[in-house]
Image (tube, rainbow, N blue to C red; front, top):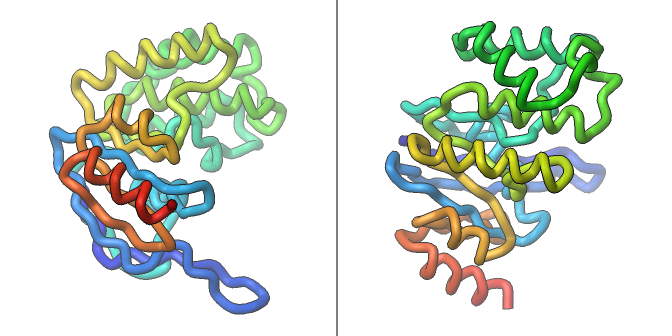
Length: 217
């Protein structure tokens, strides 16, 4: 279970603090996959980074008793001075994962070739995303966090990502953000709506979709 308690996130600006998330509360239960609907700029990515631990809230706290992935494809935590392999080993130590198994999987899956031994700062955006996605799939999480995109790279690699992700869904739940209702309906059985900094949870995707369309019409 993941429980959000009075989560607030704000950033300083020249005109004062800008509140992105305002007193967010919600519970995500095991055995369900949740969608988070919101327009571009609503704060969906910020909320996912907070849930996954990639970013801290300004106020409030999160209680969780499940292992949660970082957002698929998220590259913000890589150390640019370290190679892909060195970053991989660092992640394995954090999550207590088998380094040899993860190395073998990511080396084959990410298709980086010799570049995996080069500093990450030399990678293109696509190469970083492939490394991050491969690492996400190499470690067995109970909840996978997905920010809009389910795959990265060209068509062939995207198909590979989708197939691997579907295999993970047999044992894991997902948290998926999107501004597209149909995407949420395909992958989720429950959903919430993020609108003007506030979060409203619903027991069904249809209820969330109806509310989302109403507040954004």
